[in-house]
Length: 317
Image (cartoon, rainbow, N blue to C red):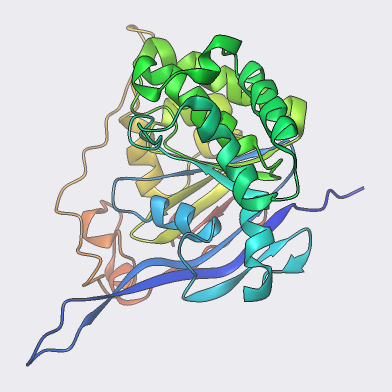
């Protein structure tokens, strides 16, 4: 029996108007273009790429922090319309990258955790709100006495646990994790990742995991999308993408990933040229100016994602 996706996106795009003045027209920055994906309960879809490739824009659009310019989002098979955005935002929550900036320093932890319930569940009693907040605090591995403390009293890892607890207060179906461990020490990263994996197994959550760290992605992901300048250039299962990358950009990213074995043979692919401006994306394949396989065909026509289970937007991949 085929599993039904919790969320799906079709041709999702987000554009911005940039610049413009008295004698000039604004330019269009296409931060996100034609993104298609599906999220399943208990599974993790990782989105990877360099800084500026559109990963965080995707996170903001999926959580409706920003509305998509084009495309559709569905939740449990139902297209999301403006009238349903409120319920959608409860079902899809986000954990931000910076655990220091995402918590209000003037609120106690108990207030921070109960705030989503205060806004979205006005009929819920104060006692029930507090009980749920304390339960969630315990679920993420913090102690009861932490309930009345302020964020500055906690370490970065503890603050990220609080941010995760806050995201879970409304019993979401989808959790968007935007670089959730990149601001933490390496010694703390593994404990937060293990917490996220444990919560996913217990609650059946679907994760959209945004990251630039491929070693982290290899640990947590089931499926992977590789992005470049706002578009997906490769999609597939984690094993397919890591063991047999098709797109030259993916191959270059993987070649830069550190290997723990000092005796392992390593072939580093060094990209030449500059990353094109998102305001002036080259005609054809956007990666062609930096690609060692590029031909005149690549520079003239943009390749589409092709394949069955393992897709690649490359004529020679």
